[in-house]
Length: 174
Image (cartoon, rainbow, N blue to C red; front, side, top):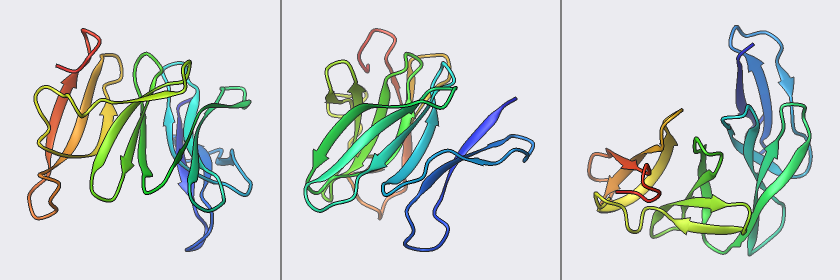
């Protein structure tokens, strides 16, 4: 069957945990539990579930991207410590690479994650067409290397957000 994943916080201030439910509303199950805040679930092309795990502690904060295989085994595929930046969303590209949205106070960015090298590449910095604003979130097309980016023009909430498509068919946005 087809599954949907979501975060449940219980009450205000509770940690988030990942749940899944069938599209028909049956078979709800809790997938994560613990002392970390698990948020932003996103399915990958192979059926694996990815999510962001925010570890408890002070500054700098530690964030992980966790992959949960269809059988349920978890593996941390990426880890980063940040000062001011906080993750705001996760999307998985058709090739399985995660894209993580960050709010860094004075700017909002999208980073393509390479788990093999544990590196992040700012995919919005050199985008063509230029974003001319802050990248609020990104969502990958299911079977094509196209990333839809929600942009806040000039990083100002006073202007209407717009949608920009980045084409990765040649390996880099153009």
